[in-house]
Figure 1 (tube, rainbow, N blue to C red):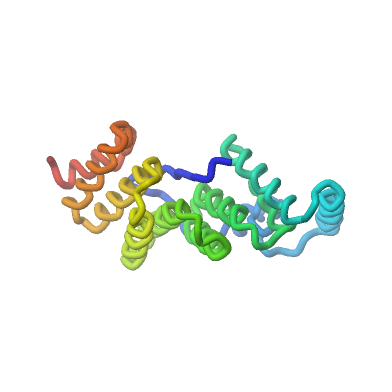
Figure 2: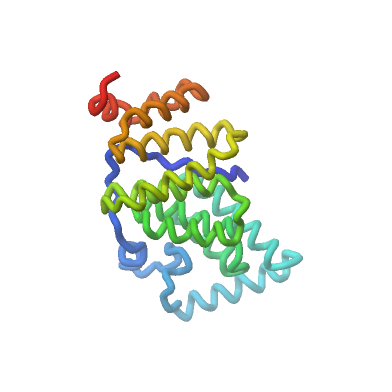
Length: 228
């Protein structure tokens, strides 16, 4: 499984704060919500869960191994741009093992795509508690913080985003992740109106990957704010 999620982050973000449950559960399909939205399941869904668990008990050595399998399937659907099915698989993984860090990470990236940065951040934090060794998660946490800041302008989110990225950049052995971290750091400093540092991180990203900045709306905005 490719254990890295790169969420697009233009400089002018349009993420809205809100609850996934409020948006998705209006159609009654709580299976499209992480952890089923914490809502009461219907009798038919409870029956489906029981059938699913029985199937896994018969076909996997342990529920934990079944959970790993279904979280991987969730990522497959996520990369295939089918987030609704991805959530269903992540829910199944969680149903099998409530400590599966990969499932919580999946919940977070889908909630980020649904423009719910606060929900995304909450799931990223849970994922990190279950797997603190996953350094790539730090970049996605910074993404969620920057997205939330763009709506609330709550300055501590910027400081925390920078801290998470600095923690990730303490080890720059992962070039692809480092490029993404540099770009998100540039956005953070742009929001801080520290354009000198913003340009420095853009340059650092370009040094590692000359194409990193080609399609970012952020660059013209930075150029407008602080021409080179």
